[in-house]
Image (cartoon, rainbow, N blue to C red; front, side, top):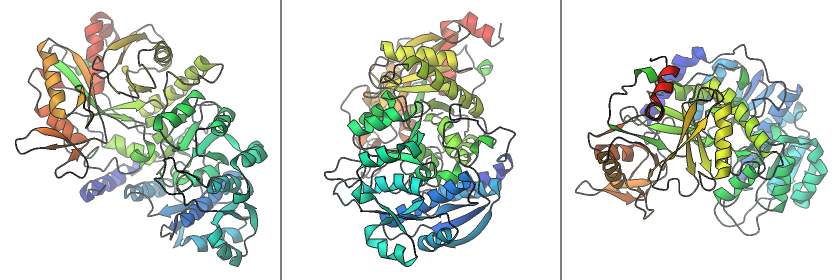
Length: 589
């Protein structure tokens, strides 16, 4: 999507303004994988080499990713001091994160080079021990969808690279590797994924998993740096690997087929999907992020809310904020989303991933906070997972849910986020979902409330609230969206901004109410010649997505409706439900 150059300039300027706050803090390095810092730990380098992203093929991209991973691994192991930055492969925002990272880590920056020259450099230094041969997957079809006869050898090679310290070399480029004097360490095409796993699982890191299409290069660097297993699929073998991975581990990348199938697979084994499939340079961006000052999101002061205002109140919250690669990429500067000038006057509310983002790319998180403009942020699940089926394949589901909630709690306190959200696989009000709601309510300190949607549909025209007790016995709401701004569904309550506005207005005529509409981030709408708002697709003339359709909806609301940020909506719900307890909590008596 075309970037707004002025928005990008604004972010770069803000990064310079706030660079003084991006510095090492007196935070101890976590001592074990069982503590709250779950993202792969990366030590900081003394030097950085820049690799030009001018690759002639996906195979060369994989070569560069593997080299980056081995360099990062050597820094972690104490055998090297230099890491790689792949320049030019991501969205324009990565230049900002790079500058902020340099300002904080202050490494020596070596000259820019192409990937093969850097392979020789790191081979001469003893970091690269040789190469892992693989065959390119040429199966026809779309990336990250089912294709017949997928060649998985690139993924087998990625596992072997982390264990054997070899770069990934596609068969057609083998002669070039040999010209550099590299030794062939293994031929991944001669080994099945099952054979690879059984032979090397004792040498792999079982606190991390990468799911990646063998036609995609991204995220292989961090998997190799951390010696992680790599998969692509949701069958018996992938279930076996998911069982082997320690519970509460992140699944990087994106997996094969239907979203609900592969996210459901990870969830049932007590893991979570990070949706990081197009993220770049995660080893460097996450380097010692546990010691970095993490800025806190702002939240409405509940004592300043005008509770005497008896209008109906409504909040609009954007979907897909659990998408880590989106928030690392174009989200912040995109004029359809965070950078839209209407965001604060609507005001918008956003699902987000503060937990994972603050660990994986704290520079993006701090920039997000510095440009928040009074909007509300909700942590979406601690990662993409379904709480009603979380750890269902484990014997200690509730114990794992509680431990996960405790870890999330530490990051909510660190990031200042006051609202927590869920996507349930099935009925959001099921007994299994309520078990999760109660556990999270007890373990998340200081949250205002929670939001629950279900995978399909996100809303059910009923909305509703379930009340759960926090650890102090105070009731907090779990709110479900009543409506969805979502294109081309053919449904009444999941529809265009204009139709949803009519429903919100109708509710308001019946008396004061507090409801939520969820906004599908990837839906497009357009206005006809008379100003009516219609469903659209991206290629339609005048089609708009993101924030502007919410503005169109707001313009159709009557004066009986007040649009508020989500945290304010939740405080109003609490005040209406139990004014005595809420006033006492806020010292407003």
